[in-house]
Length: 85
Image (cartoon, rainbow, N blue to C red):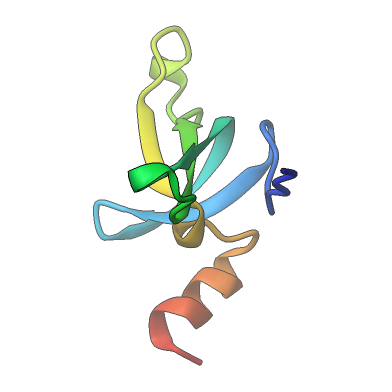
């Protein structure tokens, strides 16, 4: 099975955090497959984020988790998703 992701570690993405659009850098990507009853169920892609925006947190970055469907390449894509444009 081959799984392709829209983003890669090191990419910068936009997501909503604390009711504000924020730009983040992806630290890692985890793919979780659920196989209840040995049948391959739904897969879910989780993107782990390290927040680099705050210079005080560089030595101890904040780790956040977002679903792949919550991350966007540009702020405009995020706005379109939020306002269903």
